[in-house]
Length: 332
Image (spheres, rainbow, N blue to C red):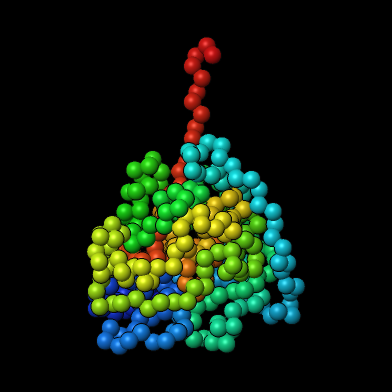
């Protein structure tokens, strides 16, 4: 849970954002890891450094032990099994296995930008290497079985993933396909797998395989961005989106693949998920990170954006329950 002091900090940040006429967010869009905005009347500063992250992880705080205390992880990735579709609609994959709700992951080496500025709120925490293996600290694991879209919405190769979409609209678009938003636990498991990998590809951060660590571009806060369809039809908004945009098209490269065969769960666009057992308007969470120089891991969840919020880097993918085979007719 977010502390009272942290909540006050978030509220203050959001109020400052509203005073600049933003759609909803901290400075730049939908991710709390983004750098603070440049003043509207001043030109964007050159090469700004992103700030330290403020979201709350779904699991315990991650420790950062001394490099002398552990062996570095292997760069070799475990083999990815063939994706399964049994019981899932076309375009979705079956994810099934034993999930750990609470995990400890120890960082062995941070990005130099963060390592040289610890304690500063101007850089985002990025870990280059984690200790293997991760450690499950739950008393018991949960058995999960569900379907998930292989790609980010609209889940069609060649198209750009949808952004500038609120949690409420994302939920509606999934429901129109007979699906739903993924839960926090479902996203975690589809991303990290039974081995509880910090990144989809394992324990080593790799910007060559996932669309992450792109240079941050400061948005123009003089006018509020519109929602997706309206923005594409508006000359000013579409030009601003094009300037900020560093998405790659769905299926453009398939090197950022999780153990279950799901593509781009780290980076490219942030993904809305449902925080179960939370009342409105707090059911919304963001997972996986986006293209910027931010955490971009499987486990952390950004929790303070409300259900009506939207941003230029916020997208989603859909999940669904497994299809139940029809019961045979009497006498068959």
